[in-house]
Length: 306
Length: 306
Image (cartoon, rainbow over all chains, first blue to last red; front, side):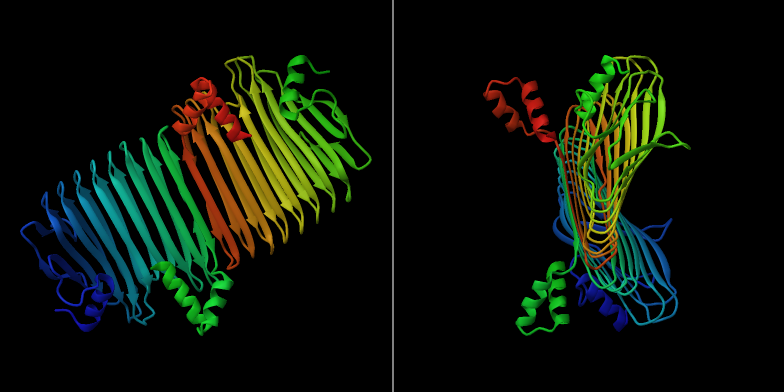
C-alpha cells in the first residue's frame, strides 16, 4: 500500500495517477509495492541481488513497461540491478524513474544499474525521470548507471530528465551499437541550490551504419555545479552527433567535456557545445509583455528544457 | 657556419633564405649560430639553463624577432627555455620554429618551453613552424611547451604549424588572460606514416572582457594518431570560442576532447568539432577537371590547411 507522498512521487516520475496499463513493477521504500505482467512481458525478481529481469518476447509491439521507484524514508540507501531483455523485432515503451521525498535529517539514496539487451531490429523508447522533494536536511541522492547493448538494426530513444530536487547525482550511460543500430538521447537537466550533477555518456559505434545523436540541455542555477562528459567513439563507418547546450545562472558552474574519437576512416563525428546566460534582450522582451524579471527567466528556462 | 641542410631547414621553418632583418637568434645543433639585437630588442643567453631571454622595450613597434632552431645531427637531444618579455604598448612579430633533419639511426629531439610575458596593451604575432626531414631510422621528436601571460588589454595571435615529418610531438599551450586581453590561435597540423601528435590548449579567461578564439585544423593520414585536448576556462565575464576540424584518411585515428568550463555567470563559451573524411563528391569534382584521385586529395588537404 502506498501513502499520499508516494503517490505524488509516482505522478512526478512516471506520470502515473493510478495503476498503469500493461506491465509494471512499482518499488516503494525498497519493497515491491505492485507488479503486473502480460502475455508478452514477464517481470522476475532477481535472487542474487536486489532488482528485476524484464523479459519482452520477440515481436511484442505497442506495449509498455512502467518500473517507477519511490523513496519516502529518510536514511534509506538502496542499490538495484534491473535488466531488460528486449526480443527481436519488438517495439515497446519503457518508463522508469525515481522520486525521493526526504523530510528527515539523514540522506536518502537510490542507486541503480539498468542494462538493456536489445535484440535485432527491436525498437525501444525509454523514459527516465528523476525527482526530489521534501524539506529535511537529509540529501536526496540518485546515481543511475545505464548500459545499452544494441544488436543489428535496433533503435533506442532515451529521454533522460532530472528537473528538480536531486541534491547529488552521478549519471553514467554506456552504449555499444552493432551495424545499423541507432541511438537517440535527449537529456534535460536542471540543478539549483547547492546541487551537484555529473553526467557521462560513452557511445561506441562498432557496426557499419550505426549512428548516435546525443543532445543535452541543461540549466544550472544558484550555487549548483554540473559536469558533462560525453564521448562518441567511431570504430566503424558510422555517424555521430553530440550537442551540449547549457544556461548558466546566478553563481553556478558548468564544465563540458565532449569527446570525439574517430578510429575509422568512415566515421563522421560532430560536436557542438555552448554555455551562456539568458540573453538580456529575451528577458526585456518578456518584461514588456507584463512579466516580472523572475517570471520571464522562468518562462525562458521552461521553454529551453521542454 | 651553417651547412646546406641547415639552410634548407631554416627556409622551411622560418621562411628565411638568408639573414633576417631585425633581431634574431639562430640555434644550430645546440649552439648559437648567429645573433643580432636592435636598439629596442635585446637577446641574452641564460646562464642557469640552455636558452635565451628576449627583451622587447615598451613602445617598440613594427619590429620582428626570428629565433629558429635547426637540428641535423642524429642522436641529439636538447631542452631549451626561451622567455619573451614584451614591453607595454609594443607591437611585434616573433617567428620561432624548429626543423630536424635526421639521416641517422638515433632519435633527434628538441624540447622547448617558450614563455611570453606580455605587458599592458602590447600586441604580438607569434608564428611557430615545425618540420622534419631526413630518411634515417631515427625519429624526429619535437615537444613544444608554450606559456602565455597576458596583461590588461594585450593581444596575441599564434600561428602554430606542423605540416610534415615530425614523428612524435606533444604540444602543450597554456594561457592566462587579464581584463580586455585577447588570444587568437590558429593551429594547422598534419600527421602521416606512424606519427603521433598530442596537442593541448588550456586558456584561462580571468579578466573582465577577455576573449579567446582557438581554431585547430588537422589532417591525419596513413597510420597516424592525433589527440586534441583544448580547454577554455571562463573565470570572469568573458567570451571563448574553440573549434576543431579534422580530416581523417587511410587508417588514421583522431581523438578530440574539447572542454568548456564556465565559472562565471557572464562567461559565454562555445565549442564546435567535426571529424570526417574528404567528401567523395569533392574528389569526383576535381577528377572531372583532370586531376588524379591522389592529386585531388592533395589539393583538398592543402586548401584545408592553408
